[in-house]
Length: 350
Ligand code: NAD
Image (cartoon, rainbow, N blue to C red; front, side, top):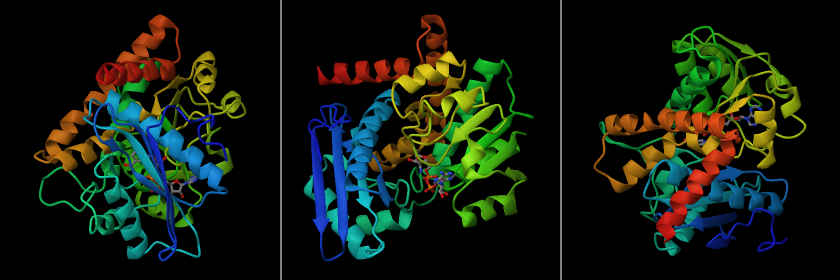
């Protein structure tokens, strides 16, 4: 398994391969950059087909965190952890303690939080052995806790901005949105979209999550294999990455792609493929930064949830700047965003 020659290795500062036979923990902690501060990014608990897939995910997600934190104006670099889920070693306090000890060993270079497959309770267990963790249960109106409702809020505001920019409409009333994945972020997003009058089509491979959504909201269910190609105005990917490819993009019917999932583009060139089809793409790490803003304000302390919500208002503003620049420069939005992120990191690195 190549590491330094890996296609997604991009000057990462460090990679830790962690194993704890007692709890069954197998994890990779990738630190992409600490130029702007400690590398922050969630911990994913996921069953990967191969170890190589887990490495690819850690490399891509950690670089995405560098870009996300830079563009959001946070005092954080980029990192990410993936725990290789294994039926023989299910989630347990021991497993998260072992993971927490590995985070502690990094001495504050990496700060973890929840991502796909991890909960606030998992992070509470991590917190029993290390302070380098955020997304913990919170009290009163302080910033913190489960970041997903705040991620959903940023995505919702970003969808409004994209609809205005692409369709020239300043309301979501009657706008048709397909949401892929109704987990932590997707369900919150559906609630906000429904309140705003959007018409929802959803899919999920998890029947329980789908049922929860159907019990609460008027949604049309569509098979997971058909969701990307639904006849809608907005496609909101809120499941996993690598879904926008040379195979899927030609078949999309939506004129906007704006959702929470990380690494939606399989490759950089897929941003141009979307632009060539006049599909407006909201760069994933710009639109989904609400959660990490919440994580950052919890970690550094002294902020209220209200202040976090005000900071999240910056997400649609940043997207509008990117959309406008893409129009005038005729460059894809992902390239505009990547260049902006690299400029911010380079100026901090000196
Ligand atoms: P989650 O695990 O709670 O939800 C994901 C949902 O997608 C699950 O219900 C899962 O069953 C479903 N899913 C998986 N594959 C699918 C498929 N092929 N078709 C349809 N549904 C599918 O995760 P989450 O916390 O809601 O995060 C969703 C995405 O947003 C992830 O990519 C995550 O990295 C990203 N993200 C999350 C946050 C956050 O605050 N949680 C912040 C930024 C980015």
